[in-house]
Length: 392
Ligand SMILES: CCCCCCCCCCCCCC(=O)CSCCNC(=O)CCNC(=O)[C@H](O)C(C)(C)COP(=O)(O)OP(=O)(O)OC[C@H]1O[C@@H](n2cnc3c(N)ncnc32)[C@H](O)[C@@H]1OP(=O)(O)O
Ligand SMILES: CN(C)Cc1n[nH]c2ccc(-c3ccc(F)cc3OCCn3ccnc3)cc12
Figure 1 (cartoon, rainbow, N blue to C red):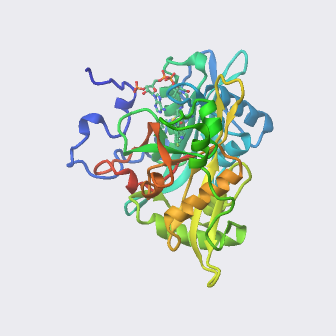
Figure 2: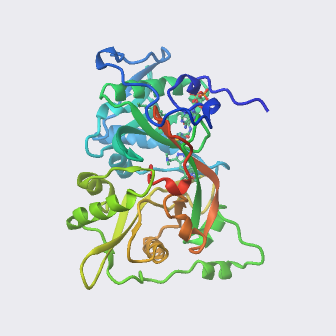
Figure 3: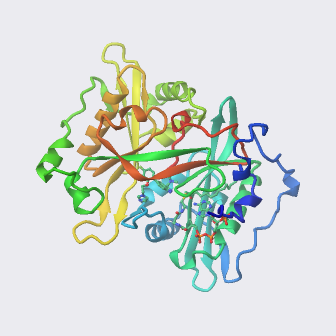
């Protein structure tokens, strides 16, 4: 079959498919930074009927516009049965980490109606690639209204966010996608653990196994009412220094991972209701913090089901096991997620997740998530287990 042309991506400083396997190419930035005086000062041109807008996520009204655009036009599963339904609180959290730039929250409006019709965002992050800590932009929430698809709006949106990131003297980015683009750093599988099998079967997310009855299926996924690990408790503000130490140490083993400091941990990992949950194990004897687990809340709209409209999904975030077996720690995460009325617990096969997925009754998802770096070549593709980065 004819190799897919990527007319835009072939113009970008990303690994190109033709270069895959060429080990003579060095690891690191593909293009050098441009002198700031040479960065294009004015925005790229949109088609004449559209205009750029900076979305102020502190504004309830703007946050609501962004929420509704994504609710109706963002990522669907391959069978178009579910669509991500990121909450307004979640978007406020995801887009305003320490040091964020409002100018990286980029919208496109129709000039006449002023309707928000497209969106793309960046947030700053320090990402370590092997021994190099690189200031990057994490790009996310790229969305074009369903009625404006296939008009090549995306290339100009990507060039505009790139320009605004360059203006802050940042030259690399990280992003993930369910689609294959030039060129994945790694490709992950996602897995699902049923917590409410009856609802999942009713909405068509899961199917009753062969030779399985509904009552047998409910029993198969049943969980204890309380976590089993002594000292397992919610993370609190006073735990930030210890959790930062624990997490930095743990993430240092992966080829790509965030370089979190205490202010990052405070933002990304302190429990925030209906956004992110985090637990730790405090040894009853020594009061050391020995283990940590976390998951974020990302519901999906159920498209076209009479009885349910929302699928409550928890997504595995960062987990650290040093004393409690990861299997037991993650089972406690499942127990508290079930207790919080989640329908399903999702996880990628990144970090050490592979070690618990099957045993904790996760089933493989129907797609993959590809990880990308912009303007940064890695010597070769990584194994999913070498990745210590989870993007929202
Ligand atoms: C130094 C700083 C650097 C910062 C920037 C770093 C890079 C950041 C990159 C962004 C990271 C975002 C990460 C992220 O948000 C997480 S991935 C989620 C993306 N969003 C969705 O799937 C939402 C639902 N779908 C849509 O809204 C549209 O279908 C989208 C907008 C996806 C495509 O709308 P469309 O109307 O169908 O597209 P055209 O305007 O006609 O343009 C077609 C071109 O767009 C390329 N395309 C398609 N999907 C893409 C995707 N997910 N990433 C990158 N490129 C994507 C495609 O390959 C083609 O280029 P090619 O001809 O070369 O192949
Ligand atoms: C990561 N972040 C950038 C959002 C994003 N974009 N594209 C995606 C493609 C897959 C996943 C994903 C990641 C982990 C997981 F357990 C299940 C997933 O998708 C299931 C299929 N699905 C899509 C919508 N509703 C259900 C996320 C994303």
